[in-house]
Length: 227
Image (cartoon, rainbow, N blue to C red; front, side, top):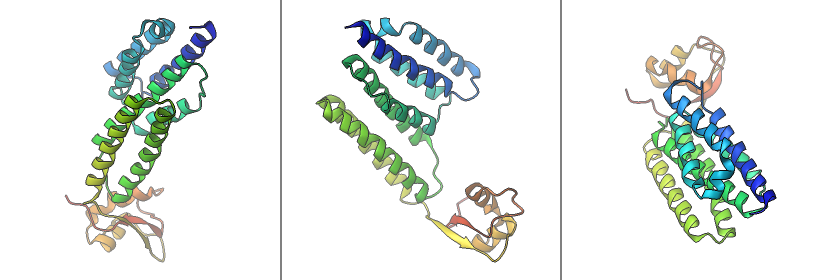
C-alpha cells in the first residue's frame, strides 16, 4: 500500500469515527464513555487497524457503541450521507467508505425496528428514506462487483421494508383539518375525536407555540389512538 493510499484511507476513517463519537447525545454515562474511549483508540491506531486487517471488526464495534450511546436514526443517516461525499480514489479508502455505509445502514435498521410509529404516513416517510439509502449502497456494491455485500445489503433492505410495511398496515393515516380560528388543543381533540385525551397527539404533530393556541389548520390522525 502506498503512503498516499494509506493517508486517504486513514483520513476517511478518522473523520468517520470522530463523527460517530460526536453524534452521541450528551456524552454522558457508561455507554458514552465506552464510545469515546474506543473512538480515541481507533483514531490513534487508524493506520495499524487498516494494515492489520482488524478494521472491519473495530469499526463495527464503534458503530454498535454509538447506537448504545444513543445515536438515533437521523444522525446515523447524516453520517452515512457524509460518507457518500468522500469520493475515495484508492482501494483502501473505498473499502473504509463502503464498510462505513453498510454499518450505518445496519444500525439504522436496528433503530427502525425499535421505533414506535403513530401513522402510516410516519412509516411511509421512513420507507422513502431507507429505500433511497439502501438503493445507493446496492448500486455501489454492484459497481464494485461485490456479490457477497450486494446480497447482504439486499437481504437487509428486504427485511426492513417488510417490517415497516407490516407495522404500518394497521395504523391510521394523517388527515388535514381546518377551523375558522385558533382553538385550544383540548377543544380540537374533543371536536375531531370526541376525546380530549388526544390533545397531546395533536400538539406533538402540529407543534404550536402553546397548546391553548393551536393553528386553525393542521394535521390529525384519521382515527384516534388506542389507550
